[in-house]
Amino acid sequence: MSSTPMRILVTAQAFAVSGGVFRDKLVKLGCTVIDSEAWGPLTLDRLIDQARDCDAIVAATDPYCQAAFDALPRLKLVARCGIGVDSVDLASASEHGILVTNVPDAMTDAVADYCMGLLLSVARHIHIGYECMQGGRWAEYPGVELRGKTLGLVGFGRIGQAVASRALGFGLKLAVHDPWMRALIESGKMESGKLDSELVALADRVRWVDMAELLEGSDFVSIHAPNTPETKHMINSQAFEKMRRTAYLINTARGALVDPAALVEAVRRGQIAGAAMDVYEQEPLPIDDPLRSAPNLLLTPHNAFNSREAAVRMSQGCYEPILDILEGRIPKSVCNPEVLRSDLLRVKQWTL
Image (tube, rainbow, N blue to C red):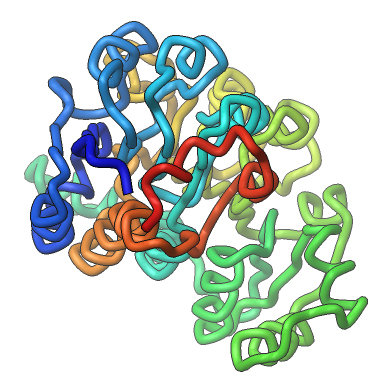
């Protein structure tokens, strides 16, 4: 192992500060752990300035692009604090010999619970009732029951599956659009184990459909797809035209999946009944953003992931890759595994 102390920058402070026991382990191993000067994602310039002398970053959704990697020759590891790595240029990271890890399952239950909470709120207008009482009014807001309604899930990864399991308990019918997952399940090429058998059993209780059929036939549409160039604004004006006028949209995935201008127009014109949004293209959402004044929208400040239990799991998942490397192990969740076979791999000097 290198005799030079490992310097670790923490930009994902919302989760990482709750991982005291894991930080303590790193400090005992001789590491220096530094919190970023700003709470939340850093700009490119601030990221470069603060990470210039660091070996590893416990990372928020800061811009880990080629320009960042070019300017950070000492950087060896980006440990993303979350499942999404859309803020990381994985190809460029590999070219620079930088290992990228994520935490794939820490927030699954938290987000799935929250998603169902949003669904219940828009179905029964719970948030509107709260606002009514806070304003000194007494009024009735009839909603709809869930049993027998159809929930369309766009994406059937970990969170989509967790939402599906919860939705079945409410008597919802499930329509799913995820060609990749459907092909994987139908091929039977799954690793053995309890999780896989549960997934296959769950898949037997859903109806696999194309995107158009999902939009046209669902009472609720919940998005659980990754943020990629192909999925950007996948819910756009054409999608809203296909949805039922009584349908609700729910997004706890990524803001870029929904065209915000099209959403505002859809609710103003009554193309859909409403939407519940926890994520946005620009965060924090500007105070004058049209979404804030559009009718029939339930907006929350990217909080679906934020449970006490998830914070502990996330903290452990953030710091574990660093401990693994220092103790001579390959981290469990590597997002660019090709770099492990590269002569450029920078973390080699840190293994025992």
